[in-house]
Length: 189
Image 1: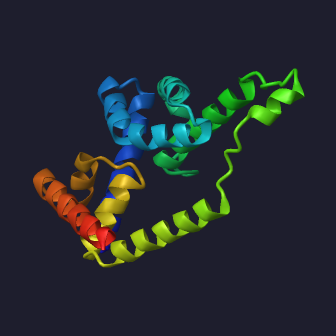
Image 2 (image 1 turned 45 degrees about the horizontal axis):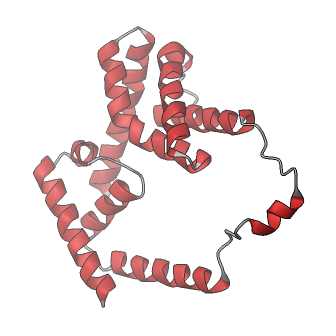
């Protein structure tokens, strides 16, 4: 969708400008960077760490680093979101590496540990569910499909989506709500 691509490009340029202002000590710009990027960065931290508490702590560290290192951001090398995502990913990996390894003193305890690997039936069911969801998403009008993916898979907020496409917040919420309703009907078949 061209309007979403143009809106995403505009949002990316805005984030670049905000980081430049943060490097100059602009607290308002820092707050805006947090509002625009924290959801996506938290998702990155959570994906790497698999622990909400650790992800929240690392996210705080990331934004402390953003405040202290914004002058190192070079828009010629990477977009702001790429730079921020790299900070979040690297800090998360550092947290994993710093955690003490979990050792088993008595190997007999290993027999009691549950097998968390999905069973073949679960893998097949998840694949089937994924395929059904994809088929149902494909039945949606392109705008609704795109907004739902951005909101639920990329972690974009409704406000961010409204800014990206230049539409009223109420309209964006309505499009997403209707699209989710259509998905529910399709998935219940």
